[in-house]
Length: 311
Image (cartoon, rainbow, N blue to C red; front, side, top):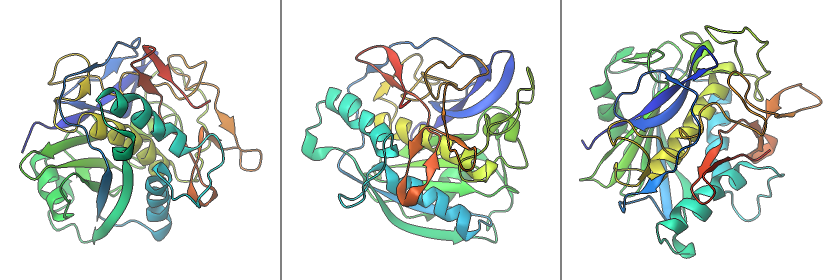
């Protein structure tokens, strides 16, 4: 396997809060940092049709699967699917408009996220305590296609090496097959204060009231936030020679360059001035398919050297 990119974690204020930001190589919990320029290292990016093959490892309810599947379908919706603004697709368009265009990719080759298939492993064939090496092994079982992504999602009772301690997810790749993979864990019972913030109080620091999760599931809404960061990093830096800043073994990527930022006015310990659903009181910044609402991280804009938010 090629070098693995691992989710970075974030310290908000004096708060150790793992936000599952993706990076390559092992990263320690870090402080909230100012945006730094991301450079293009002339490597490959994922473009055109990008099929996603999902492996659900452990037990997920139909509702939980639907929340995540709808998020993926919201990235590049079909023409007849009009999403209310601000939308997940507008957020994802930053990848095409800024990153892929900077890499010289023509508009006809911009990314189209497709759900290529889903496999369930409810009985946890490799057990409920996974090593990093087993992540790539399981990802391969999802059957990723060339130029696609295998998405491994682990249930709340499945532990993964490094989960919560230094990461909430990771992404890696196999150059031989030309595919990438992503792993994201459900933090609902293991570390919601680290990997589901701001929908749960942080483990340390000021105990401000948590925000209401937009889909009513702290673990799954946390997974979506982390998955969004993984997707951004995977498409723009799938093999470790695309867009990143800093050391190749532990770089900042499209989302990790803006840790803890979700809306304008963000500062350490505060995600920003998010939208609030008047009916449910849930906080969000992006509308998705089937009327869903999500929270997605800010993306670094190389052209302005700033964090770009939807709201």
